[in-house]
Image (cartoon, rainbow, N blue to C red; front, side, top):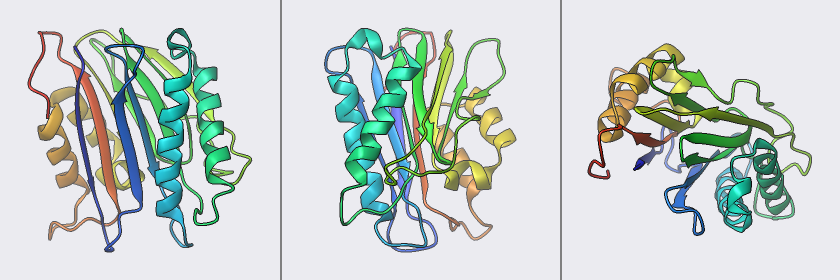
Length: 222
């Protein structure tokens, strides 16, 4: 059974403009819906945009037919609905968004921006699921161009959603290596250690959501 661990921390400033939601799909037991957004800095409303985008994505996924959750085109529609929710909000700016569902040996989702999703699975190297995503137009522009993704998973597997404050400063080689070696809090702590400055401070907001299945029966949830 999949297990879940999440962590978010402001970096370099007082207000964390990342947001995330992780929830079990109400009509698909064992299927975890994950949405993670990183509000665009340099202009107002990024944090608000991230929150609205994550909530809208999870609501759209909950309304989708369970058998459609494994289709990337459905997830591209989820991201577009999040864009449509953010763009008319007067208090919201722009944001990235990665949203997906993981369970039943499959991960499927879509993204826009530079937040990322990574999958590791038995006998295979880690795969950056969001490698083909478009950074612009951002979510909140009303014209985002989400790119879907999907992959099969065999235990032990892990799927991570990461803001760029994680992968940019930890480096993809380290992220992939750690994701194949650790799970839960141990994994997030190791990623934070790699992303932080020597004094322990973060250079950017750091947000990670990890879903994994060790393949040896359930383990305590973080």
